[in-house]
Image (cartoon, rainbow, N blue to C red; front, side, top):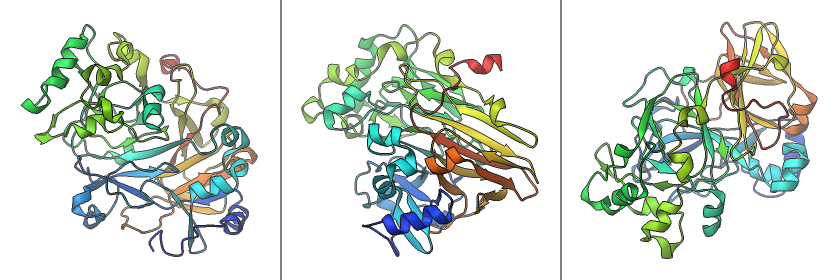
Length: 416
C-alpha cells in the first residue's frame, strides 16, 4: 500500500490520539525513500532491485532511506512528500510532521517543541556504490542567507548493513594542514577543465564498521562507500567542491545551490563558507572520530546500550544516537529523557505492543515492522523491548538537542 493511499492530510488529531493510545506512545513509521540524481545506489538498503528507480530514471536511483523525518529532501523535481516520514495506523497514514504540529509536547516534548516548533533533526541510511563528491554543508549563519538552516551531521557504519565495502570505503575529510586558500581558489577556477584537484588537498580515512564520525558544518568531506547511518540537523543544504567524481561531471549549480544568487560566481564568498580552521585542524581525527561507548546506566544482563554518536558541535548538543543490543530471550525497559526515532537493524522482537522485524527485502511503497517513533511520552515513562528471535535484536535510535545530561565528550572512547 502506498503511503498516499488512505492519507489523512488534515485534522489528524483524532487518528493521532487513537494511534498514540493504542501504541502506548509509540508510532509506527513507514519507509521513506529518497533518490539522488548524481549518485549510484549501493544496493544494501534492502530495497528490491526492481524498485531502485521507482521515482523514474531521470530522478536517479534510490540510495537513501530517511528515519523520523519532518525535513523535506531538497531535490529538483521532488514529489511533494519526498523526505517526509509517514505514520501508519489501522490502514491509514499521516505525516509525522503533522503529528508534531498537532501534539508537539506529547510527541517530542515541550522543551524541544517550544524552542524549535518542529522536530529539528532526522537520520538516514545513505548507501552508495562509490564516493560522494567532496562537499560541505553550510554553517547556520551562511544557510540563513537563503532562508535555510545549517547542517552538522554524524556517521555510524552499522555492521548489519555493510556486508560488502563497495567501490571506495574511504572518506576524504577536511584539508591537509598547511593548505592555503589560494590552492582551494585555484580548484574552483579550474572547475571546467576536468578534475579540479580538490582531493589532492585532502586526506582519506579508512572507514571501519562499528565506528563513526562527527562532521561540523563548513567542513569538507567526501563520504565513502560504506552504508552509513547519519543523524543530522534537519536541513538538506550543501555545496559540492569537486568537479569530477568517478568520471561523472558535477555541475557548478550543485556547488552554489544554497548560496545567494548574486554570489554564484564570487569565489571569495564561496570559499568563505568553509570553516577554515576546522578543515585544516592538524588533529582532525581526534576532533571528529567516534567509537562506541557502553552506557552502564542503561545496560544490564542480556542487553547493552552503547553511545554511537556523541560530543558537541561548537559546544552545542544538537543530536546524539545509541545502539541497543538485546540477546535472544532477554528483555529490558528502555527509559530515555527524550523522544527518539528507532530503526531495527537485526533480529525480531517487540517494542511495547508493536512487533519488530528486520526485513530481508522491501518493495517500494510496502510497509515494514522495523521503524518506530518513540514519543517523549513513551520514552520518559519507559517502554519494554523484548527479543523473541534466535539472534541478537539490534536497534539504532537518535535523539534531539539537549536531551542528555550524561552525553560523552569527543574522545571519551579512549578511556572506556
